[in-house]
Length: 276
Image (tube, rainbow, N blue to C red; front, side, top):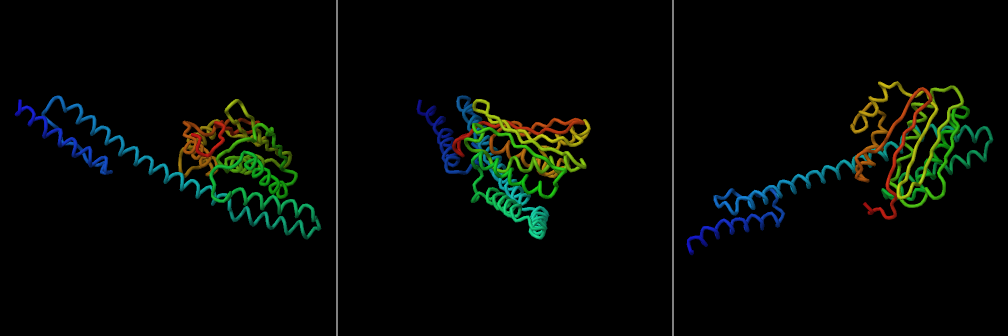
């Protein structure tokens, strides 16, 4: 019996030793194989668990990295020098033509726009603020595009409660203007629609631009997950951020034909930033 105990003890002590190393944070430690059939499965199980943990941690690190990158890119896109230059240019032009009310209006929209873009570094903001942000953006673009751009924001009060990941709507509206409405000489329209459906929040940005061919639409959809894409950075970034932050399998859904384009997404309603 003593010999048997000795045979079992040393592999068990070895297991203990490696389990201790892993517990201490050395996840690359692997238990050497054992001849003892009773411990074979346990040894393999521990090694598989260590593999899994290691890859989960690496994946988590990569996701954090991706989040940081996409945050940075989102803010860079917001603080777009062309957009700022064109807006300031429009303000000067309005001031010179004596439209004081409009100057006040657009200056307020611009300061709202940047205040909400930055939100003191918070990722989650009130849905109400997100809607105000996109309204500020459209107010500014309307001054620039005048007759070419009409817009409508249809988000009822009950859809404006709770929190949302910030800066999801503006890039979709920007995309609708630059790839849709801009190609119409006049009568272009962008609609932002929001609905609360139980514990889900649905948003769509709809334009009446020329739309996309089926081929182009497939290209854009395929490009959604990519980092550098012909999708237009805005769409793929929003898609990626929805998937990363909300842990969803899909971010954006896109429909397009000769009557225009609709880009939509559905998110769970959140009350705290950490509700996952």
